[in-house]
Image (cartoon, rainbow, N blue to C red; front, top):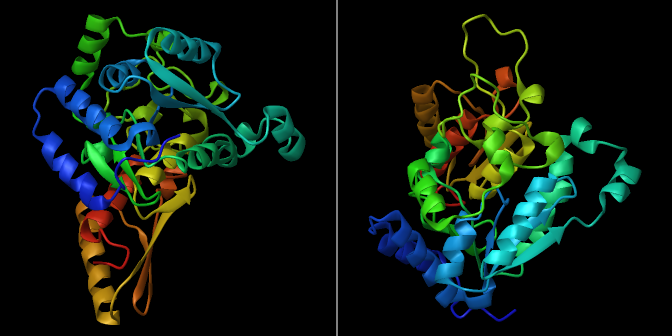
Length: 344
């Protein structure tokens, strides 16, 4: 791998985002972002793909031929997903990098017992997805994914070029401004490969034990978020009152994705957390008031722990039994109030 042509910085990301955000045509915008990333970072730029389709890979091959596309080979994928990966790799000018966990499924079963995904899905996801992705991205200076603003309320503020402070990398989201009509039109025009599971109702495709198609009558709209297709049995709250709408808990995969996108947060399906330090006790108290104002506006209340000049924020929807889209949106609102690590 060659060294990045330019050192990644928050300023570089902000300048690029301002430049590309003004491009109205979604295809031209995506191509411009990908071309810039390739020219700026060379072989130190890579994309990630779950192989639900080849849209992002197709655009990247046009803008930056030979780009590396990271695929997390968890050992639990549908055969259709592996076939889609191989299909895309054979017809596009990209280099697929299949990344495996440190342990095989058999080795994981021997250490933790069979079907860890049923007993502790968060740990399974961490071992087979989160950790392998972190190790792989450590070798790059910039990365990109197919995140779109219309996928959920928590992603409406997604930038086309952003700074991934957790990893110290530039993060590009070439499809941020696209909607489903844009996707369908591009796929049709260019005959882009699509995972066959999409045709039978899978709105979001992950590991086979943790993914199901959208049920009849279930809302498949983007506003419901990609998690609508995953982990419903584990996340459906018990004892609901008839007619009452309750938030749905996100799957471990969706929580891991959300935490990766949030700059200052950590956590898992049991809750997400952030710690913010302030210059004084008075400033910390004022921050608690500001967070409370946002929480009241959303009618969603986090746990706040004030320790002199430090505020620890914990967010989880107890009624749903885990982290929901509402929790992630509240975290984003808190980050908008305090974008820096020290409350600045």
